[in-house]
Length: 462
Figure 1 (tube, rainbow, N blue to C red):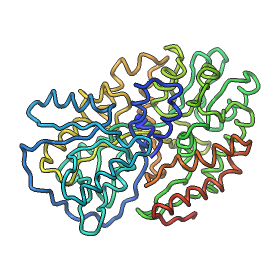
Figure 2 (figure 1 turned 60 degrees about the horizontal axis):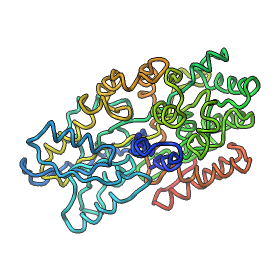
Figure 3 (figure 1 turned 180 degrees about the horizontal axis):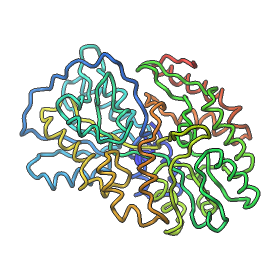
Figure 4 (figure 1 turned 30 degrees about the vertical axis):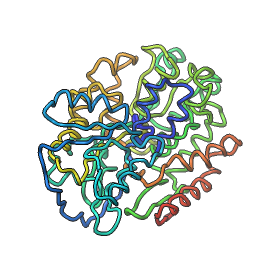
């Protein structure tokens, strides 16, 4: 969800297309927000050159580009700040891999005018917006840590959530929301079957095997969506998309951190307690939605999968903290969505532009009623305190959400290309054909490497 940004976020936005069959237009818009949130961008130790703002005019109009989901928030800011002159433009927000924003910025760079002051986009947008389009040019995104946003504010974002915003030692965006992966479960069914919620991946596998024998047809997960790899392989710290420097991608699917997850899932797929049909695929909600016992997935699953798609009655669904592996004391988890706000380095009203981006991402007034989980910790507390964000669930999800928000692994990097493409084009067809995940890892790795090279990355498998 690009927030969700499924959108998460390169992204994971592609999952939104799969959701069309089961979600309402309103829910889809919320999910389309951003590419994979939580991804990382490698930084260099050198640090960028000192930022030189354009000539400032505190009375100039601030042009802001936002997607339809974030439009009400911008309008709310305008209402509460009547002295600020805003020109609000609605665009696709980089949903579904759109390059509209990048194309327009490249045009403005050539003509020397037209840049918006503030834009909502995906973490993937930061991979180009934080770098000059040509030698001697100015990167589109302003480094917000250079006398624009106080360090104390930046320090209050969830651990690792600003990593996709960072390049060359500076921070080029503010994270709007995150989609940290938790373990969802149907408490009503778990209690009825006498099952205990697992805390480790090994317990999860054992329970999945038990479910297959005792309650065939019930499911503990699915790997069939375009973003499933983010919930499982990202959570296993699999180095599928790991930038070792801004121009070098490591993809090593032979790593034990990858094979431990593929082996686990292969066992449960064979037992039919993990489905190869996507949660958001045509007909899944009708045929199997009521039989989903557990789902390892993003924080937006509660409202957008179980409530909106599966129509599971209120008071049944709960969330547990991310799973650990035996022998490991610290959990790691994935992220499936999350958008960002960037301020233009060309803005002639940086003060008002920065204030807008900061208010949108950090203010309780805006974020407490946001559709997805805020990246800014104090705003997330306000979001969790909002009864509308908790009343659907069987138990309080606050602890699980807060824990997971600080456990998103930053080794799954934000790249110039979507992490969904190779999964969708190589892995999902292989699973449909009856091949195992483990046997498909080499082909998945090759597809990732080929795509990375096509956009200019050097690739290493070590």
